[in-house]
Every structure is written in structure tokens, then in C-alpha cells.
Length: 50
Image (cartoon, rainbow, N blue to C red; front, side):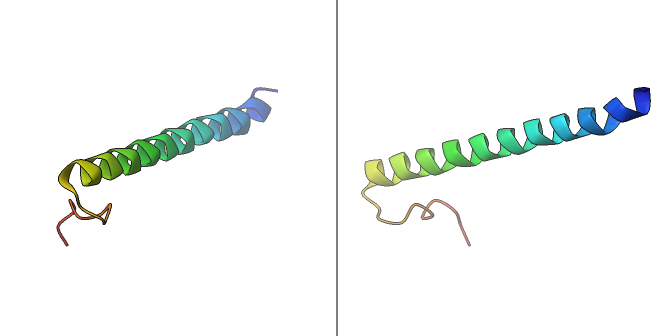
């Protein structure tokens, strides 16, 4: 019975990690947009050196 819950536990942990990554990406994009507006830049990626 215990082996049934292990994949579910793993799936739940993976979904939490995906959710955290999506939230971090959203916050990064929002911060980049805000920083671009403050500087007067048009590109949201202008702060990232390529």
C-alpha cells in the first residue's frame, strides 16, 4: 500500500516545484518590466547582458 503513495508524493512535489518556478518567472518578468519603465527602456530584457 505504501508504494502507491510514493508516486503521488513525487508528483505533488514536482507540481510544487513547477509552481515555484512559474511564480519566480512571473516575478522576474514583472520586475524587469518595472525596471524598464523606470529607466525608460523599451525592451524587458535590456538588463540582461548577452
